[in-house]
Amino acid sequence: QDLFDETERNALIADMSFGVALTFGVTGLVLLLTDSSGGEEEKAAEEKKAFNFAPYAGPNGGGAVGTFRF
Image (cartoon, rainbow, N blue to C red; front, side):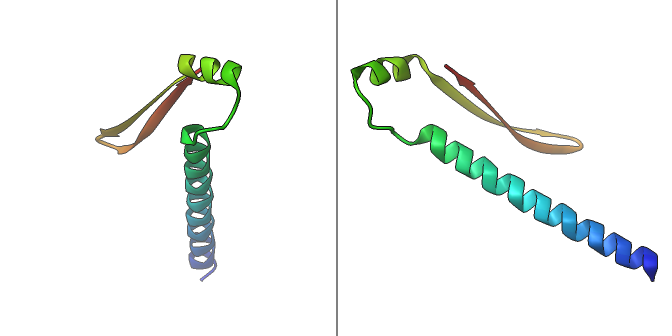
């Protein structure tokens, strides 16, 4: 019974951690992709920035990779 309870607790912690990571990931993506209203200097600097996003999959799992150039 103790082993079962510990396993259930660890599974719950893993699920909550995944939810937190997903929330932060979506928030970061939204912040990177939203248009900020700035002056001419900021607009010129934004033209040099580049954001690339690519999903990947493998035999043991998958995920996503994002790069941001500034």
